[in-house]
Length: 250
Image 1 (cartoon, one colour):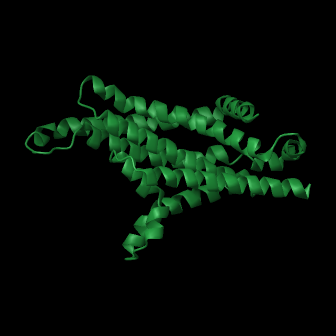
Image 2 (tube, rainbow, N blue to C red; image 1 turned 90 degrees about the horizontal axis):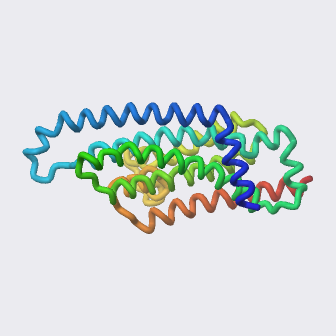
């Protein structure tokens, strides 16, 4: 049942003009950024030759591209998760789902996997851009794959947060705004604490950006993997509990 709901959600996204428009705009913006980064790298090649340990194309093109991609996809997540349950509650179709012989975990995980699969497709298209450089430049495939994995884990965690927040309201716009606010807060919490001279291991650990930067450096740390897994699991668990509460009320 989970995969049936996931496939249905995935198909509904690809049949939606909004999803296609957002995907097209995202790819267009990142393609433009990719061309600019490649052009800057070509202009710097003369000076990089004189350096002993000069950064390569992976550090100067791939990593910056994935950093921009993270920002763009974090802006995209609230727009694609805001209707997951809030629209269902608003149109009263959630009552039918809750009364159907479908478990709450199946509903939550099905919708979650459907949206995450959509974002995996987007990450794959983004990864193809720097991968095309392998034909004419020494590309560090390890760092490239680590960056793609980090970006996938980032959007998967953000999707879980957006899904939970969509269960709290009947207004999709409210769900989108609160999701965006939460994601931005978790992205800058580490930088904000550093700017104010506050040293906190907890704030550093909660930072989405800190764990993502490790992947961009080509570092595969189990603590970063555990962070994204626990982050997603926590919000998915909260979403299931929220739906169980709504089911008991009815």
